[in-house]
Image (tube, rainbow, N blue to C red):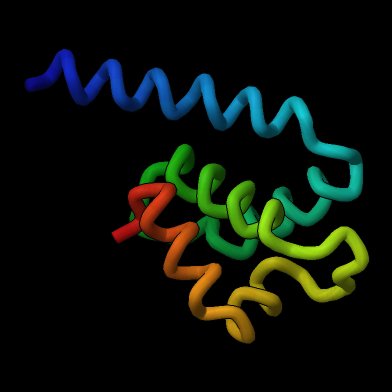
Length: 88
């Protein structure tokens, strides 16, 4: 069981790293703001990173609100990213 959990966490880290690598400078700015906004969350940093990256991906490139502001107006996207990241 521990091996499966470790493998899952490693796979998540690799996917999150790949997604972060493909981000533009603007995307990184918004994801970093989201990470900062959620620094006190009671979940692993990798979960928050996956969540923020997911939310950023769902937002328009022309969006001017932060991820934290945007998620409040888009509960379905928030729920989908919570589920994808394991933030439940």
